[in-house]
Structures are given as C-alpha cells and as structure tokens.
Image (cartoon, rainbow, N blue to C red; front, side, top):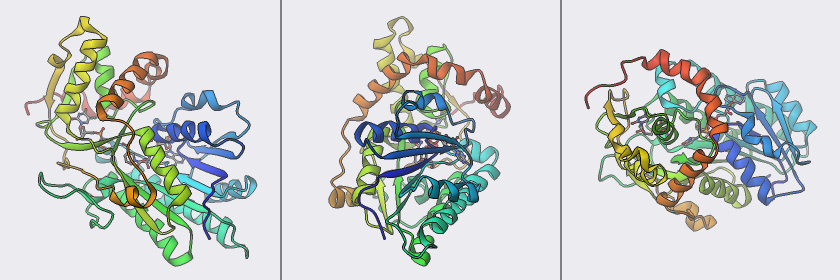
Length: 362
Ligand code: NAD
Ligand code: TYD
C-alpha cells in the first residue's frame, strides 16, 4: 500500500544540510501533521539549523542512530509514522576516500537497519497501513560522463567510483529489493550537487565562500574542469515533495538543477558576487589555487530529469546565478551559524587529512 498524502513524517538526517532545509520547507507548507527528526548529530549534524522550529507543536527532535533498528521501530509505532524521508548518511566524497568504513556502516548498514524497522512496523501487522519509504540518493551512483555523453537517466547503469558513491549505490539496491521482495512502498531520488543555506563548509561552495571571508586560498582540485550540475536545495525539496505526493512506489526519479558548470566557473561566479558584496577584497579570484587532484575524481555529472518533469510536473525554480547570490547572502548574514563549526571537529579533520600538502600545481 502507498500513501499520496503524507501526514506523519520521520525525517532521518534532518539536522544535516539537505535534511534541515527539507524540514523548514515542509513545515512552512504542511501544518497540522507531525514531523519527527531522527539524527545522530555527527560532525555534519547541527541542531542549531532547526532551532527556529523547536517550538512548533508538529515538530520533535530525537537524538538517535538509524542503525538502532529496535529504537527506530518503536519510534515508527509510537509516532504512528506513515512516511520516512531518509537523508541520514555520510555524505562527503573526500572523507570516504580517507576512511570508507563509516560510509559502509551508515549508508549501507544504516539504510538496511531503517528498512528492517519499516518492514517490521508497516508490513508485519496484518493490515499494512498506507506508507512510504523515500530514499534520498545521488547522481554519483551512475559514475562519470565524458564531455559529449548524454546526461544520466534513471535507466543509466550504475557505475559508482568513490567509496561514497558505492555505499549509496548499495543502499539504493537494498531499497529496491525491499520493494520488490517485501512490497515496501519505496521511492528513490537521485539528485545532483546541492547548494544553499546550512551546508557544512567542507563542500565546494561554502568552503570557498568562508575561505574568502577569512582571507584564505580557494583550493581547486586538478585543472578545475570537472563539471557538476548544481541544484538549489529548495528545488530539491520541491522535487521530493512531488515524489512523496505523487510518485509511484518502486520508482526512481532523477532531480537536477539544469545548471552544468565547471568547478572553476562556480568559483569565479562566487568571486564575482563577493567582488560586489565586499569590494575591499576585490578581485577575489586572485585567491584561486590549483591543488592536488582528488583520487578517482569523476569528470562530469549531468542529470536528465525528464521523468520527474513529465510525470510529476517538476521544474527548478531559479537560475544558478540567482541561487548563488541568495546563498552568499545567507552565509554573510549567518556567521553565527557557521563560525562555531570552524572551531571544532571540522578544522581538526582538515588539518589531519590535508595538513600543508594541499597546495600543488595543476
Ligand atoms: P550531511 O552530511 O550534511 O548530513 C547528514 C546528516 O545525517 C547529519 O545531520 C548527520 O548527523 C546525520 N547522520 C549521519 N549518520 C547518521 C546515523 N547513523 N543516524 C542518524 N543520523 C545520522 O548530508 P547532506 O548533504 O544533507 O545529504 C543528505 C542526503 O542527500 C545524503 O543521503 C546524501 O547522500 C544525499 N545527497 C547529497 C547531495 C549534496 O550535494 N549534498 C547530493 C546528492 C545526494
Ligand atoms: P564537493 O562539494 O565535495 O561535492 P562532490 O564531490 O560530491 O561533487 O565537490 C564539488 C566539486 O568541487 C568536485 O568536483 C570536487 C571539487 N572541489 C574542489 O575543487 N575543491 C574543494 O576544496 C572541494 C571541497 C571540492
């Protein structure tokens, strides 16, 4: 059975970047139901991202781990959850190269634990309630494209290249299997690179923006010609909302931003905005430094989102240029959100993994 009207949501990883944006997006449009966030608060989780919502009667924050199957099953029953939106993951490719184990633990075993809890709560009683398990995945499962290859479709064979992408691919397969074998009403979305408010400053855009504010170099891996399709996080949330409301169980949907850019183009666009916002530092692009490339660095990702457009009416609502300006302005206005992050675990990790050897010739 499936539900077309999600009422009582469990959002895993809701204190992370996309999860927090989704919780804000959802509660601004759907009142009177229930939304429970389950988050382990790893280095990437930040409860401060949800502070403005804590007083809402619909909202509850649970500090817990998706790998704790019994706890999740109890939570599903206790809160009478009808919809799981599963964001919780280890999400940074560079960290997966430095230490893949956490990616297998959280992304593969964690997703399986969640699937087991959902199956127990929703399918093992006689009258299975209407339900939906939505799994948030990535375009990185499809591998890397050449410059003239057509964009990824939902039918593109999986060819993950990094430990992160492989762990997400494995979790996608488990979700698919739980639909096929047990009849769990699942959907999967594979989206491109997100950007927007509340993104942890280890990812390209917030990292470069904060480095500019702190007068530090902008590290560009390799020759800077790797291409990503940039999706504003609010458009991603809209795509997920459409899938929750009208997506077909067992189906996969790609979500893209229609904005393919090289990394160098992205960083130059960021510098141009900063030249306007902070003219004293212009030209900010002088801070660009080419550094040692990421091992196995995928060259190009691009998304064909025809299925989501045709079947569910999706369209990204903003251009990359508008979205980037809005994102820069958000970070400029919310130093109180990102500054504390820099003094903690993140800075230590960067020191351990990059040290001073980060700068090199392209
Ligand atoms: P993030 O790293 O910012 O946040 C992950 C969240 O999951 C954190 O709040 C963390 O505390 C929580 N978490 C980690 N392990 C957990 C566990 N065992 N139990 C409960 N909570 C746990 O990630 P994000 O960028 O918001 O990505 C969200 C999802 O979207 C991920 O599944 C990721 O693979 C996918 N995705 C992200 C992007 C992107 O550009 N950021 C692109 C495509 C897909
Ligand atoms: P990232 O934000 O880590 O996302 P992903 O690896 O999931 O695509 O990186 C986006 C692109 O930017 C990717 O091609 C790697 C590149 N990159 C840099 O050139 N320098 C950096 O410091 C970082 C973090 C990323």
